[in-house]
Length: 361
Image (cartoon, rainbow, N blue to C red):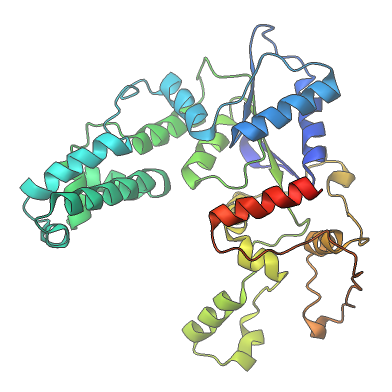
């Protein structure tokens, strides 16, 4: 699949397929023989696995760097917008202490000050929560932060944001990211990596995705994403969401068909909310079928075991629990242990049970 403006999107339900597509991509040499290949990952474990796969498929894996998304995008922003690159005032730890001081000395923050009271420890806990909230605003609501910095809002959060030093002349990370997007879209940016691969990341904040899309106008950027379903499941709703929509529309449960809700597979609807949101973001950007994408990108595991049967149903967006759709039930063998559920009273016990199962295997 592909996206406009040069951002490529490769999906599959098997990591092995994605790794083979990545291996084929890195086999094409870069223009600069001394340049490093850039593969953006979410964890060190994924980076290690990709190294082993590239070595197995290509014979060697060298000159490949594996930065995390935020680290890589900060590097890109620093090359494009050097202003504020070394300003760490907007990191959580220093921002927590500035908020802690502002909560005691700033008029107009009566709601937050009343909640914190006179206990300095309680005030510090509130400051830490607010610093984490502002950190999320910088990533997920950069337009709010920009308006607050310009003085367009009078709420207590906007006042607190301006009190800790966020004015129109400051350069928090969200502002640098937005300016970098503008510069990339205007073209003429030098010093960027020749090819960027984003591998195995299930979701990205809209601001990060916007910056990657803008980067795709200048260099080759490809997202290799694991998808459990080959159909579009971005509109699937869970039973709880369906009930909430019915109450909002003032309808009874037997009138659900009138809302034309997409139910899909219940596991995707209830446990895949983050991936569903990311899929919706990609769809809004106008994704379509990629002619270079092989037809076997999605592999049907069959139905020889319970786990494979569930994976196959997820792949084809089939929910056999809905008798009205006419799908037959799978017959599960009593000896089938491919899918197990363990009820544990805490995280420590979960690890103990996992260790026992691995040793038994």
